[in-house]
Image 1 (cartoon, rainbow, N blue to C red):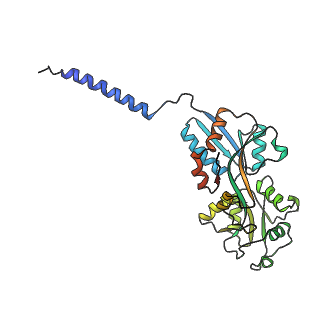
Image 2: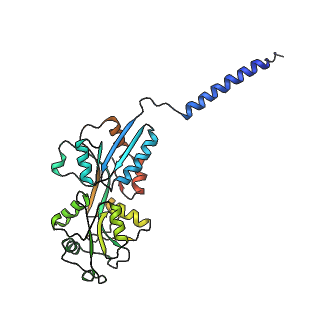
Image 3: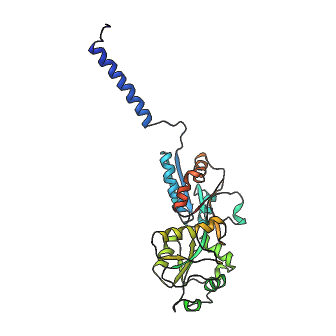
Length: 285
């Protein structure tokens, strides 16, 4: 028979094996990534885009622990201006850039959305024509009974200056902003949603995606069709909803490696689940 190893030799071999295994396990738990991203990114702009970008940012931070993503709202015009001036690394815009805004800027489409008129869920009016909506915008119609609803003043909640929805609706209905009626003004989407949910006589307009998402969560609002087309993520995706728009990220100079990495990730199939969860339409590159 071969000689048995001494207990001391066995102990030493066991300790060395344990150290080796522990080292391997430690390497698996804390991998070192050469050249991993680090730094801070500042994004400002559209309140329509902000919830989606915030969720994408959280997932990106998980993948890159040395990165911090800060998302602030303030409207599409602010996002474009901040990206231009360098106050933000990326601007968020829920409208296409005007001709005067295009030079020296690059846009990256993140998703698609539409703009719908919404009323309180108890409002009996189920549909309004383009002409009727234009009459509300200009103040030519002031009572719901003139539109087939219950008697009561129409409380029109317009959107604040700098909001993409204001400019889109102004262009679509060919009504200059200065001629649009405003009983109340809403800035952020959530502000407008709460105002309509709490007032049966109110009407406003905002993101199809944000409105559909909140309605699915039980907020008492209803999206009105436009030109006979249902206001929904499905009709926006199909290209049949008449008032649709791109959701953009804007940069004013050559993106840094960190900025470009985040833009690429935000436009990738890896976040399409987040885009759909917030009721927007993913893009296909």
